[in-house]
Amino acid sequence: MQGIFESILLTKTFTTDLKVIKLVSTMKYTCLRGTKDILPEDMQYWHHIESISRNLFNYYNFEELRTPIFEMTELFERGIGDDTDIVEKEMYTFTDKGDRRITLRPEGTAPIVRAYLQNGLDKKSGQSKFYYCGPMFRYERPQAGRYRQFHQIGVESIGNEHPYADAEVIALGIHLFDEFGLTGLSVSINSVGCPVCRPVIEERLKQFIGSNLKKLCGDCQKRFDGRPLRLLDCKNKKCKTYLTGNSNIHDSHCHECADHFSSVIDYIEAMGIPFKIDPTLVRGLDYYTRTTFEIVSEHLGAQNAICGGGRYDYLVEQFGGKKTPAVGFAFGVERAVMVLKQHSDIIQKANPLIYLVPLGESNRPALFKLLNELRRNEFKCEIDYSGSDLNKCLKKANKMGASNVIILGDDEALSQTVIVKNMIKREQQLVSLDKVVDVLNDSK
Ligand code: ATP
Ligand code: MG
Image (cartoon, rainbow, N blue to C red; front, top):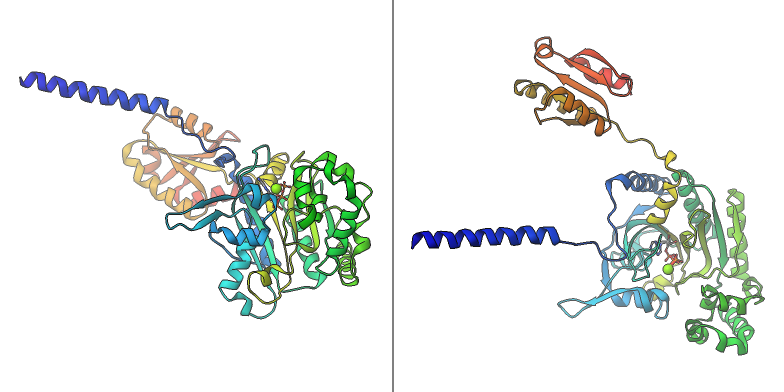
């Protein structure tokens, strides 16, 4: 009886094991469409961009502000604008367990302005200059350079109406890409006017379109009444042809906007920044007033905009603050990485690996001590604890790209030395244990 019981148990365990094995072998979890893993081999590009950005933001006196990844949906609906592509089609919006409407942030400006007001940063004197880095979420059709989770680094300069503030953020944007080592970039710039002249610009545009409205795409027809300027942003080729010949937006600017724009141009010219005035550059978000700009790369193909920005003089007020002018930009890190990868020579080689090999159990503690000392002296190290023979260890070190291998066997232990084997020059030397750091420093 007992025998039968045992055999059933065994079968069960066996079957269960089989099931587990089957489950593991058929497990096919992949990350969701439009998202991707950023692998260690790409990290050097990300770190390059992130560390240069933080450095430059510091020189330009911008401070980091981190906001949550999700916010109340209304913040984006009101901030970005109801009938923009982002709000209409691209937001990841859901209701949480407490019945709140929540959205994964699709952009950084509205959350920064919310945080600026909520935390009383508007009560501090003068201009506030912030930067942010982090993931954004947009439900878009994934393709090269376009993801559903992507990363932006951006700046917001809040509280300064002066054209200098516009020129400063444009200069910062260009300075960033120069420091990254990217070439083939250019600035396109425009002014979309203010509440005084915008209605004039819009009316002229509407009159120009006139009876051709029916021939435009659905989005353009929908936007014609409420947001006609957005027609200039339509990517549809047919719509673009019906807009050719439309009067230049700059002819309809009020004096203040015309002066502001020409001062921005004077400042960026004075700084030697190459630019092109593009009277059709309106950008897809509702909050922009006056200056809009983009930095585009000739290396990116269809998704060629790396960085977009502009002035938003009414958003703080719209969110309940007092009238506070502001200007900022955001760039897409994935797109910057794409361009950087085409110029991989500009990335400095990472700190090379030092591989430590103790020959025999009894020699491990001495090498662990050295390992500790090397790491504290900023050497990237790994120790071999496999106990394999020296040849195998050297092969492994080679595979891992080690620049030097440090070997300690019984003879070396007796004389308080190690063998330092340079894997690139293929030569070795006997070094006193207390001189290893100096020798490695000299061979850097
Ligand atoms: P695009 O015209 O390419 O859709 P956008 O005008 O929607 O860009 P912004 O909202 O101004 O872009 O965002 C600033 C930058 O963020 C862009 O220039 C781009 O580099 C990057 N970006 C925007 N959307 C995506 C995305 N879905 N995937 C990757 N990067 C993106
Ligand atoms: Mg977009």
